[in-house]
Length: 421
Image 1 (tube, rainbow, N blue to C red):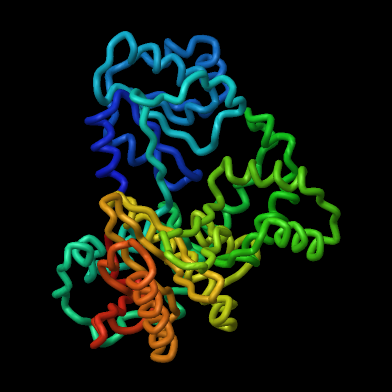
Image 2: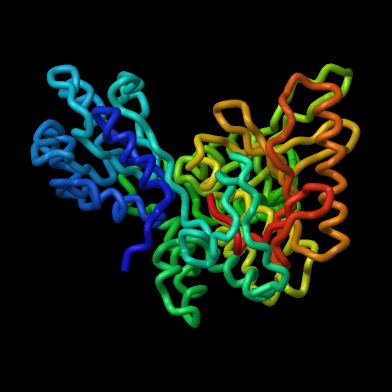
């Protein structure tokens, strides 16, 4: 069974406008399965024999009916240069599709950026809309276009325990397709297989100790949805593992973790404020999928239910994942805002045409919703008074559970299980 992915629209567009498309992202997020929809021939570089063949004669593996799909291309990096040469000789749209779950071992083998020939698409795990866990009652696209006449849902159709399950399960297709009774175990298997590097073709991973990688990821998880500095995370690793870890070694491991697309920090939004207010630029620490953080700390749905404060931080991470997927479909990006007066906003979606919206992320409840709406209105007032930015297209409190409606002050309250792009 195949669940349609939002990213398909972008892949289709890139194939119509570029000679080659690189679809990259974490392992098992569905890259190959989705890209197989568009290929007329393919080769998978997932065995020693196929990798050796590709390295010996990369031009040969590119022969086949087009679009030609090369899965895990980074194991033979010269493929990139050969595609560039082939497109220089005969440029046609949609000739090649590349997929990869890590960056190349030796980036010096990539002798050009691919600009004008190879375009890139980042694929994340599934959002709740893609996994059929959201009814899509509210569309971000419609709200940006001023269409806010959606049907209000005044009674919740899910509870926090189900949200906790979705958060621990994650958006991995293998887990989404599994029966609920075993889905969490499938995600656990995924986590356990992330750090099997003994036979890796990439020396940067073979030289990394899995236990150290897990320590760093656990520290990241303890600082999820926060603006913790790198120094704070290093200190956390040392304190919780009684281990000396110098900055150089930490950075080396962090680069490897980024190379397999496990973490995805969110940069700050910096509007042009005409005042002495300082905009904080520290990124917010996030994961490409919250289930990784849960597995790193061995957190279960019942653990989240027993600690609502931590639950709120983990839920924010999952909400950011979905917002990034939805915003990407609209040609936008997601950032966070915080200034030195304490004014902050969990997520700012900024579109290419300059439109933007502000979103506060809460578990739910009248008190939390009221606090989120008040913060959004303060941000709106500040931007209108002291910035050249246009007014926000809309303000939203995004909740884990609860009703979906529009408040009298114009702020939308939307359950994450009612949101889509």
